[in-house]
Image (cartoon, protein in one colour):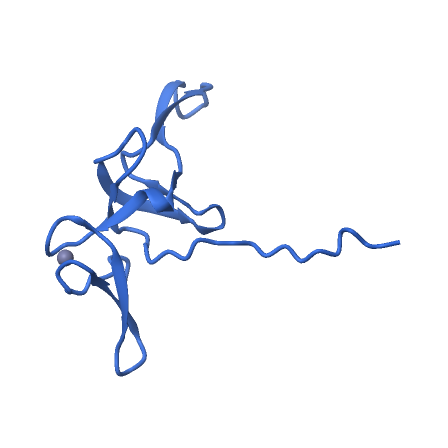
Length: 121
Ligand SMILES: [Zn+2]
């Protein structure tokens, strides 16, 4: 009998150059055109939480520390719907990568060619 479960499932994770604290622009969906800071990258789901983007209303039960009610919270958004905002040209841009002589990698704005630094360093 063949073992039908013996199939190697390759998990395809979207390779992102986006990092926590990056300023990003939403290019698709209901928040198209909004920008915000990345709060968290959910790389296993190819999504990110972005400050002020994809807000959903959640009902919260009262707890000893809060009175409950409707809480507005960010919901994860697809990484492919996000573009990094270049600090130099202040526009959403694609990133190219550059390897420096010492082997470290930096992110380069495809529009102006400037380095896009990581904020969480
Ligand atoms: Zn730029």
